[in-house]
Amino acid sequence: MNTTIVVGGGIAGCTITYTLLQRGHTVVHINNNTLPSASAVAAGLYNPIVFKRLVPTWLATDVVPYCKQFYKHIEQLTHTQFHYDIAILKLLTEQQEVDLWHKKQQDPETSRWLGNVATGNIDGIHNKHAGKGTVNESGWVNVPMLLQAYTAYFSTQHNYTAINEQFDYNQLTITPQTITYKGLQAQRIVFAEGVYVSNNPFFKHIIMKPTKGDVFKIEADLCQDYVLNKGCFVIPYAPQKFIVGSTYNWQDTSWDASLEGKAELLTKVNDLITTPIIITEHTAGVRPTTHDRRPTLGTHHTHKNMFVFNGLGTKGVLLAPYLANHLAQYMHNEIELMHEVNVSRYKAL
Ligand SMILES: Cc1cc2nc3c(=O)[nH]c(=O)nc-3n(C[C@H](O)[C@H](O)[C@H](O)COP(=O)(O)OP(=O)(O)OC[C@H]3O[C@@H](n4cnc5c(N)ncnc54)[C@H](O)[C@@H]3O)c2cc1C
Image (cartoon, rainbow, N blue to C red; front, side):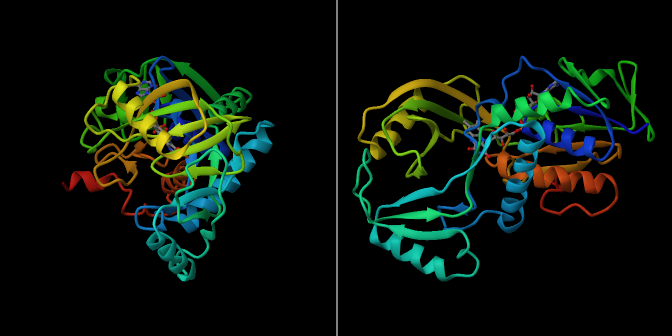
């Protein structure tokens, strides 16, 4: 038997579960469905460009094509659509920003991701911008639908068992060969608990810097062809329906939709959109962000059959497929872990 226990049913837990099932593992998947999760509220956007500095996001040339191909594959497998290739239109306020965009279009590091700068007006938004830069190869994933697709697929697999409960760390017995949990025997365990990893006695040394985000769903009469960005993202998800996200708050790390978050998002959206909006939903969640903004993968320093898959931060959609594969390859002794993501970096601190 080649049994792995996976704890966590967000995008990290589900993606590593899928990846291990593909490699022939038997997976016992433990998730507390009553806990709020970041994946349940994620806006679902992925963007190859960091707008602040107009540079590619970390590992862009690897992770962007990988995630596109991965999600298309899961869509085919599950006969569900949850992934959309959609351009981001970055509104550039000053001529200086337009000039920088043009310069970066010539730079081999960024040229692939930066499309044309448009100058025409767009109905329903403040047209006080010097230009509108198009990002290539960006996309949107309806994350709750992805999780539903995973769940439906898992339920058809003979080598998969789901348990809906709060994992109790005190019930774990570990030997170098075996992990025993409430009478269940496995060869290894993977923890993918998002910000709740701080309750995990085996990995509480990971330095998390949780980041709360508020997000809206709105109705508005706006173009559906692209994602608008200026201070916030406006993502079309259905006719005349948009997701507006997100705020970043490191002080308040509660899961409640906050008045402060609402006020901030409203200011941003009103700075962008002129057409009337109706807020149909306001939610919030806490991103599993680490102190150095890098994901956290690898084995426990003593228990080599105990793994962690966490720290996806603001980029769960983009990073989960590539890094789940990276972790699986590492588990099977096929590769060394990238040092930036290795959980061993915390032991040294
Ligand atoms: C407002 C907001 C907007 C976002 N927008 C985007 C976006 O546009 N693009 C993007 O890529 N990312 C976005 N993110 C980030 C993204 O949501 C995260 O990167 C991702 O969801 C993290 O997934 P995870 O599986 O690690 O954690 P989670 O989704 O939080 O999942 C953790 C799971 O572990 C379970 N769990 C924890 N402890 C236990 C236990 N002891 N026993 C049983 N179960 C347990 C929980 O029930 C939960 O289901 C956003 C996040 C927020 C909050």
